[in-house]
Length: 105
Image (cartoon, rainbow, N blue to C red; front, side, top):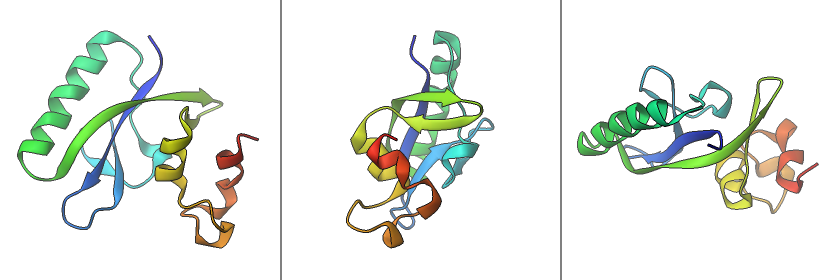
């Protein structure tokens, strides 16, 4: 199974968020809970669905990620944009220091 994390948008403000290990939602990709097996995926899915029903987040879904020395990186380019911000100019990125992840460097 590929490593995964849950992502969504927070209902209160539309900000992209990631599920933390305790089931809460964080704006920080590096604080997201990395799912490593089917059992963990099932538990994370239940927590995500409960947050959706409670209107904390909207339409949560798992995404594939890689992890290297504790650094989590979405696999798909679309998810990198959601995590790190727009590609039009590095000054507008959520995390300018991590803008190189958008290019795949």
